[in-house]
Length: 462
Image (cartoon, rainbow, N blue to C red; front, side, top):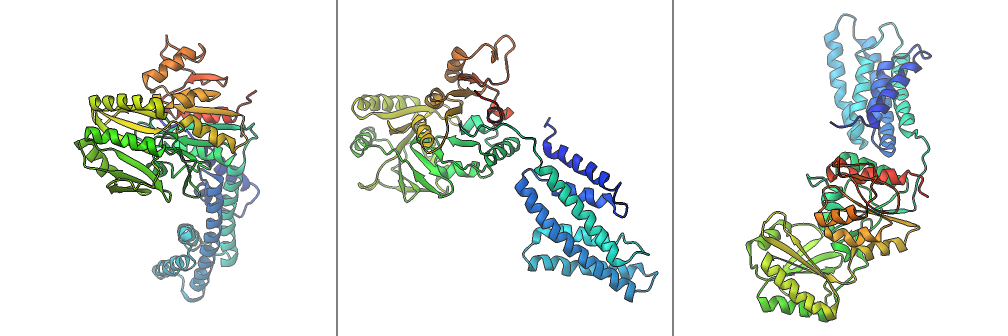
């Protein structure tokens, strides 16, 4: 079951404060303050400020319309004709909503109508329309500003902005549904806005990475293509590209031609990843092509890479025996060329493997160190789940491995972990330690990365 979050708790506090205010303010109605306070309570203070602004404008406009209708009713409509009053109120909704559209404030339509109806429908017969309307506006504004005050209040916490947090994405920060949970999004955004240095490391290009991260306000460059390039989200450009030496790249292409196999050749041109390919040699790589060919920030081209363009990495997809044969050929070539070569299972197609070939300079470790050079940080914390994360896990002052990690990575952690962190007899993972070393944490389905970052960011690390 989901936990009771702070937004729920703060909403209850807002309602209680609104009720307390009306022990002093006898002329008002706490109902309207409580409703406005709940509506204004948002996950982030910036969103609450925006909501408060919209609701303040909507309250004033709705109240003004309501007062006008009350004056018209009492001046021109005889008593005992409620149907005429209801008709007038209903018709008045049209210009009220239309006004919010004219001033390009459609978000205030709801609150404007709520205040308008509270003034016109539940009005005091013997009370001046002006004073009645002012009281309803004040009721709503009280709720808005109480909500804003509660949401902005925070107990002072020790923060550690001098830590660089780097998390792998797939099966680490992403849960088993392939998404960042709402809880993790909220926690990460809160910490980033308070100065936490957080970024992501992935085999993906920006084309598939950006959509997954769209709700997390990452400020630092993203580590893409297994460290072959960084991507600046704000400027929408690739930086620090680690291209493969042109002569070595030609030798790699010759090996694929020798076997009559296709390979996807990735080159960054004008901050778009251009992927050149030949005739498909198996159905899985064709399926892969059709899955990714329409993604933004990518451009698939049938044909050879122009001679003057640099190659950032190669990707091949084939059966296990063919991939291993290619790997052996490339490792032999690697004696002179220093390539970074790795292959791994295709999770969706049993028996098939991916083979990725990068420059030896392209690694998650080097990418992290490149980012660190531009920051004032004295500590690196990383999170991973697969063999591809080993170099960055070992580079870090603290390397954290999720419970669902591949066995090889889990074995590394268990060999080095402190006994207090992992209890094999209970099959249970305790709270992550904050000492130097490698530790195991919970699975990617328990928000373990965000929780561990929060623990370290707010801890008193010596």
